[in-house]
Image (cartoon, rainbow over the protein chains, first blue to last red):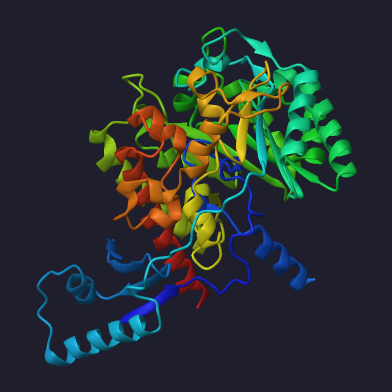
Length: 50
Length: 435
C-alpha cells in the first residue's frame, strides 16, 4: 500500500527571481531555501482569492 | 533518487526528482531499502504494481532537475549592521558580543543612506527590496533605524520600489513607542529568547553578568500581544547545555508565542558547542518536538515552528532551490563604516570584504565566487535526499566549519536531515487529519 501525501503543484512561473532573499528568514544560521514560498505564486493566489 | 525513512510506525518515501512524498507499509519500505521481505506472491504483485504506477506518473524515481541556478546581478537585500555594540553579553554570540572583533560603534545615518542608495542603484528591475536591521543590538541606534526606514521608503517610491524591513532585537530596549514603530514599519521582527529562564540566563547575560530573561520576557510578550497578525519570530539558540531543547520551544509556545524558531548554536566554545556525540539526543529531541507539535495542532493549540514549515506542494521553484541562499551576490551585509560583506556571518573578515557603500563597487572576483556557489558546486550534496530543500546549506556555516563555502558541515547536514524528516511527518499527519 502506497499513498501520496504531497506532490508539487504545477507552477506557471519558474526562475523569475522574485523570491525573497533566503537569509531574511527567521534563523540567520540555518537558512533553508525549502522553507520559503514563491512570491509570485503567493501574489497570484491572493489576487485569485480576491 | 528516493529516500525511505521510518518515523515511529510510519514509513515514508521521498522522491527527490519529483519532490513527492508518499506513505507506505513496512514491507514496501523494506523492499525499497533492499531488505529481505516475506511477501506472498499477491503482496509482491500489488507492491510492484503500486510502484510502477507511481513511476509512470512521474512521482517515483523521477529524473532530477536540470534546472540551472538563477543568474542575476540584481541586489535584493541588505543586512544593515546599524550597531556593532550590544547591551547584552551572550556567551555564544558569533559577533563577539556585538563588537565583531573590532571597536564598538554604531552606523551613522550618512552610511545607512549610502547603503540604501547602493541597494536602489544595484537592484535593477527588482521592485521589492529587503533591508534587515541587525547588530549587535539595533535598538541601540533606533534613531538611525527610523531615519533609514523613512529615507528608503521615500527614495524607493520615486523609483517604484517597495521595501520590506526586518529587525532582529534582543528586546531589552523595547518600549511602547518602539513597538508602535515596528508595527507600522517592520514586515518582520525577530526577537531573541532562548526558552526557559535558566537556559536563557545561562548564556544571555547583561553587561553586568546577570541573566537577562526577567528583563526581556515581559517586553517581548507585550510586543507580541501588540503585533496582531503581522509576522514575527521568537528566535532562540540551543547549545550543548540544553539538548532537551524541545522543552524550550514548548515553553515559548506555552508563553503565548506562536511563531518560533530555535537554532543550533554556531560556536567553538567547548561547553556550548554542538558535537557529534550530541546528535542522537538532538535527533530524539526533534522527534519529541514533532510529536508534541502534531498533538497540539490536532487539539487546535498549534504554533508555528520555523523548521517544520516545509511546503512540498508550493514553495520555491527548482531554480531557486538549486541557487542556494544568495549571500555575496543578491544579499550583502553592511557594517557601520560602510564596508560590504557577503552576509552578517562574514562581517569583519577582511578576506571577505567586498567593497564599501561610499565607493559603490563590489569585488567582482569575490562576487563571482559567491554567485557561482550553488547546489551543483557542493559535490557532497549530490547523493543527499535533502538537497533540493536545503540547497547545500549556509555559505558561512560551511566556510567557518569546513574552510570552504561549498563544503557542507556534516553536523549541520545531520540536523537538517532530521528536521526535514520531522517536517515531512508533520505534514503527513496534518494531511491525514484534513481528510
